[in-house]
Image (cartoon, rainbow, N blue to C red):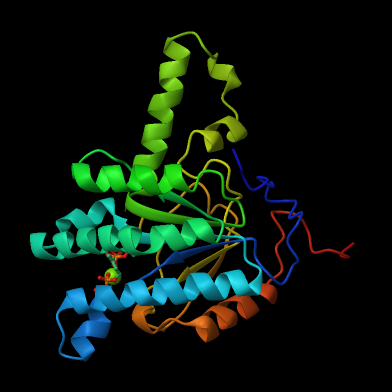
Length: 253
Ligand code: IPE
Ligand code: IPE
Ligand code: MG
């Protein structure tokens, strides 16, 4: 199985300080983008898929190795059924249309989130995307769909508790590394940079465990307008940050 070496937060081997190895993105603002144009919200989501394609391409060109995007949260079920259906339809269309190309380009695709309550056709497509790209390692695209950070942590805890109950591990064997390996992002390094678009400044239940030491960048751009220039700006802001991981500033006495 191909994987990115899961570097701990204090060691960023393989990544220059200027280019993050792993960028996580909360793709927000599709509805407002559509509203500003008098269009239905679904039109904003459609344009959002285009922005995703462009952003992944720009990220690869910049030397970023992993991108993880938030595309449907466990809380997004609270939206009108028609909007939920539109979002499910877009995921299906994206996988159907882009899977062959992603596979050819060496992209490993993962879908983070629970498969419970996913319609069967989507669950099948998602399995197919993961299976077909499992041997790729040039770039890692993870789509968080039907994903909630707390749900993921609870699911990981249930899986570890099951191992303890079956006598496969002892409670004391559960370390941070073992816990990370029980999450949907196993094999990926923690995000160096988390970008949220649309001016909102909250995490909204995304990658709660993994973003312990991520640098947060908030962009006012609405997601459908996000492009390579917006990504470059976010990465430039990241490059200007000093990551300390609880230690003192380098060179301080
Ligand atoms: C992000 O855009 C996409 C999803 C959450 C599925 P929104 O749909 O949240 O857009 P706004 O925040 O209403 O503008
Ligand atoms: C977060 O955006 C979820 C996704 C981008 C998929 P939301 O628009 O759902 O978040 P809130 O409701 O503003 O916190
Ligand atoms: Mg939103």
